[in-house]
Amino acid sequence: MADETRTPPPNPTQPPQPPQGPQFAMDTGAISTVYTNFCHVTFLPEELILDFGLTTQMPPQPNVPVKLTHRVVMNFYTAKRLLHGLNFAVSRFEAAFGELELDVQKRVRVLQGPGGGMRTS
Image 1 (cartoon, rainbow, N blue to C red):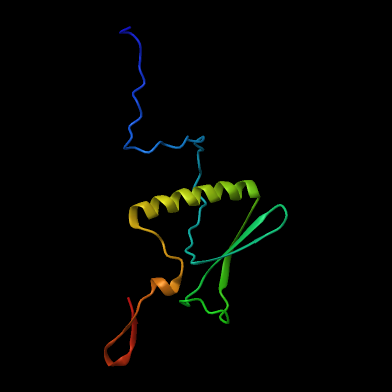
Image 2 (image 1 turned 135 degrees about the horizontal axis):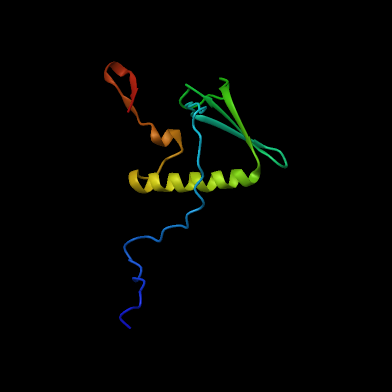
């Protein structure tokens, strides 16, 4: 039957694409952008609370307080969607650039500098 339409077989070199969810229109007119390198997570029975801040201490020092600047509160359904979105984004990043090491001590190499000083690279 020459008039039949056939679906081509899946290409084994391309990974299957996840099903796309609905696309939502977004108004970014009132959006603000902040940088954070610290996040504290707490929760209540019905809500997840994310507190964000900026620390200049590397590695973070327990006796130096981190100034928290933003709080996001969400229900656990939204938190789970966020979890999936972050997992997808980090997995794509690591596939392109390599695994992210979370242990600061393993990331920072301390080298002996000239004159006995320490420097990091």
